[in-house]
Amino acid sequence: MAEDIKVLLVEDHMMIRMGTALVIEKTDGITLLAEAEDGQQGVEMAKELLPDVILMDIGLPVIDGIEATRQIKEMNLDSKILIFTSRDSDDDVFAALAAGADGYIMKGATAQQLTAAITAVNEGTAWLDPAIARLVLSNVQRQKSEESATDSINYKAGKNTFGLTEREMEVLALIVDGLSNPEIAEKLFITRATAKAHVHSILQKLYVDDRTQAAVTAMREGLV
Image 1 (tube, rainbow, N blue to C red):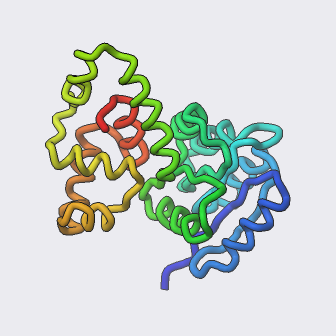
Image 2 (cartoon, rainbow, N blue to C red):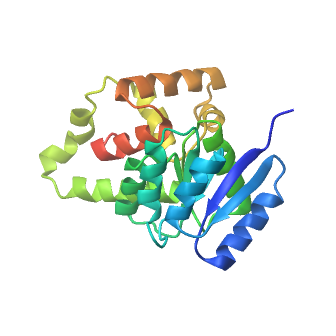
């Protein structure tokens, strides 16, 4: 029988912390290990308790969630960090992911989405909230529209210097939309094994370690 996923919740707002803690405690297979009220406390608890997943707010006192994420990742712990915040600017998203976050989910997510995200990042599958993906994608598209007409026409073709196949480009777009391998398989009418193989090939060609980094690279390079 698999052990429960041990979660450290780092959140300074008491009511949000209490509500989130309740969701975690009611979910089979997930255990709330501890709660921290500021970024520094979160870093110290992460080092001491070694949680499987750290649910990290951004707007924290003492040090913010992005700096806390950076410090925790520098410790080379096995803990996964899932950013859980109401901040949805692309600057915050990129800063959090650059700090090493394994996923990003909005506080408006349902209890089911939150627990699914915790489970996904624990299993090594990066979770990028679809709303966040669309936000950053719209920023990329806005930048594209500011280019000349000729450049815009050749934008995707010119940016695809990674040797991705047409099918891999389709899979990459679905990764950016936050779909899992089974969902990609269903969407493209392929087997799960084939979807997994495409994702593995994409990660290799983009020189990234996980799906979140692949999504960020895709959006930054204008591949989708």
